[in-house]
Structure formats: structure tokens, C-alpha cells
Amino acid sequence: MRRTLHILLTNDDGIYAPGIAALHKALRRVGAVSVVAPAVEQSAVGHSITLAHPLRVIEAERRGKFFGYGVSGAPADCVKLAVLELLKRSVDLIVSGINLGSNAGVNALYSGTVAAAVEGVMLGIPGIAVSMDFCQRPKFGPAAEIARRLVKAVVRRGLRPDMLLNVNIPALPLRRIKGVRVTPQSRRMPPEGFERRTDPMGRHYYWIKPWGRYDGEEDTDVCALRKGYVAITPLQYDLTSQSLLKELRGWEWGRK
Ligand code: MN
Image 1 (cartoon, rainbow, N blue to C red):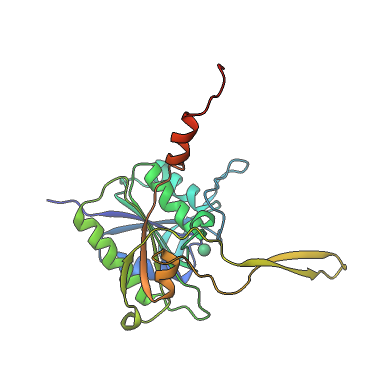
Image 2 (image 1 turned 180 degrees about the vertical axis):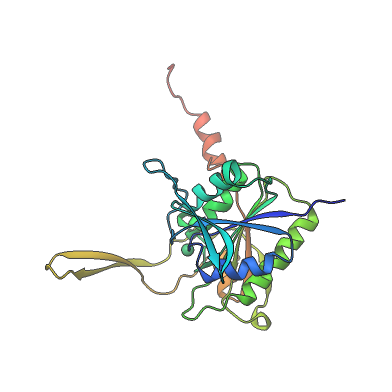
């Protein structure tokens, strides 16, 4: 008999965020789901881990029932702690999300949602990060349904430890989503700046602010998402530049 698929569900918006609840509901139809997620929001913490403080764990409830473990750390902490310490059963797949806000393009590098999936692959467990484009009154149902179908499709193909996917979904009803595109990551930076404000003591402070539309190069994740497609981008965490590696090996570096 085949054993049930064991999914570790996490996010960076925090264990009480609506996006993780929607994904939990959808993924329970695919396998057994354990939730280990940050106790409070950890958006844009990237791949940080907690060294200077201990990690505290609370048992978080939803509608009066045990939902999962809330951890006083970053998403990467949650995955490490879950896999190495908290969960009794071995994890087959890590799903991170649904994040509110796209993690397409260079956002993938700032994202705690993506970092959780990357951490999984570093530990030998496939990871899928799921994000939905930002909107004012988010409805996560369609994105959760798309994520469920996608997870099923990936599992059907056979899970492999290097499977690392960054999935970005438009904030649209299912019928208005045009389809799925497998795309490379856009390298372009979003236009952004800082808003300078004044605090009650008359001192200045700064707040990062998007500075207009974020357009990606043709056939990239950012571009596909903008056109109404689900963008799937396969990632890898080895940051080596193969082209520079080759070139630098040809340089004269001296004898030492
Ligand atoms: Mn987030």
C-alpha cells in the first residue's frame, strides 16, 4: 500500500494569515498536511535564520482546533525546525504560501515564502512556493485550487529532491486566468523609491515604496503574470555563475 503523501505547509505571512488557511484546505485533499509557520509576519526576510535568540513554538488553533506550530522565527527556521525536530513523520514535499503579493522576478530573492521552499530542497525535500499577485481584498480560493492541481501534477510525475518551483498566480477568478506558462525569472528590478516622512519628534524616516508598474522582459514570470497567466519558474539555489566560472578559471591568479 502506498503511504500517504506528507506535506509540510509554511509561509512568510504568518500562521494566522488567510493565504495559508486557504492552501491548507486545498492541500488536505492531496495528502496529510503539517503546518509549521512563523508566529508573526516575516515577509521579505529572505533566507535569514535565527541565531541570536532561541526559537519558541506555540500550538496555533484555527476555529478552536489545532492548526499547526507557530515559530518565533523566519520561514527558513520553520522548515529546519519542522524537518529536523518537530515532526515525527518524514516530509515528502514542502509547500509555502499562499503569499499575498507576487514573488516573481527579483522578488524571489527577498521572499521568505520562496526561501522556505529553497530550504526544503537544501534538506533534500522538494519545495513549491506559491504566491498571488497583490490586491486590496484578496480571495485566495482560486489560487488555492490552482496550487492543489499543480501539486497533484508534480506528485504524479514523481517527486525528486531538486524540484524547486516558484509559482505566481494572478489575483483573478479561475475563469479569467488564461493558463499556465513555464518561464524564466525576470532579472529586471521593479521601479521603487523611498517616501520621506517626518515623525512626531520632527525627525525624518523613510519607507520603501513601489514607483509605478513592474514590467518584466518578454517571456519571463513577471510578464506572464501581468498577462493573466500562472507563472511557474524552476529555481536552483546554487548561485554559481557558470559563465564567469569558466572565464575566471582562464585568468592568471598568481601562484598562491
Ligand atoms: Mn509575505
